[in-house]
Amino acid sequence: MKQAVTMYKALGDETRLRILLLLMEQGELCICDLMNALDMPQSTVSRHVAYMKNAGWLNDRRGGVWMYYSINPELDSFTKSLAELTCNHLASAETIIADRRRLTTYMKTKVDSSCL
Image 1 (spheres, rainbow, N blue to C red):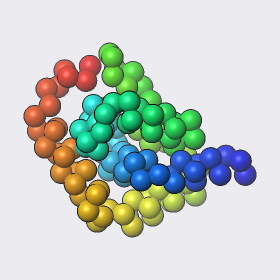
Image 2: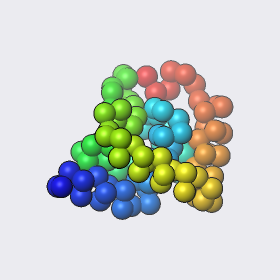
Image 3: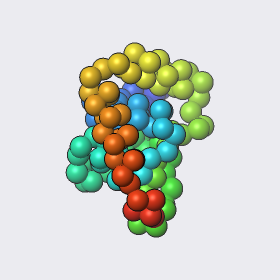
């Protein structure tokens, strides 16, 4: 029960919901990708992804000096369904559309080695 409460609490913040949606759609993103999509400083984004990682939502891997994050593939089926339902419900929100637009623009200009 305690783990379920922790997982739900992690989604109780707008920034963390935005991160969830971006990662559900993109698969894996580095901190610099998330910073640009969310238009937030590295410290803020890192704090939110750390919270989500500690709650069990995310996996991370190091690539040079950058950390890359993805949705934890070992989430149980209920939690995966909850994430999908949440993403489907929020996909057309103006904030999410703006995040996608910023990420797309950034990815077009991103140098491949900038996050290594």
